[in-house]
Length: 148
View (cartoon, rainbow, N blue to C red):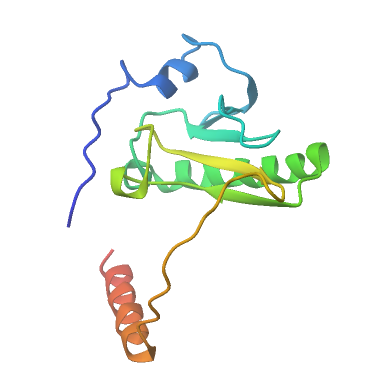
C-alpha cells in the first residue's frame, strides 16, 4: 500500500505555527482538538479551514476523536456559513496525499460556500465498472473493516 510521506514536522508546518499563534490568522473557532480559520485564498466569502491542533499529515495519522472533531466543527461552520453568507451550495473538501492534491501536509477540511460561476469545478471520470466489480469492491472493504 502506498504511503504519503509527511515532509513537514510540527516545527516547520505552517498550520502548526497557526495553532501555536506564531503566525497571524483570522480564527473562527477553536477547541481542544481543532482550530478553524479563514482560508487566505477565499474562493467565496466564508471559506474556512478546520485543522487538527495536533500535527497529523493526513486522515490516516489522526485519531478517530480528532477526525470526528474536525467533522463536527465543519458541520457547525457549514450551518453558520449558510446563515452568514447565504451561498447557493456548499462543499466539504478534504485531501490526503499529493496524488489527491493535498497542498498542506497537515490534516484539514475546507468548508467551502459555493455560488454559481465561482470558477471551482470538481469533476472526475465515471468508468462505471459494473455490478460485479462493485460487489467485489464492497467485499474487499467489508473484509478490511472486519480486520481492523
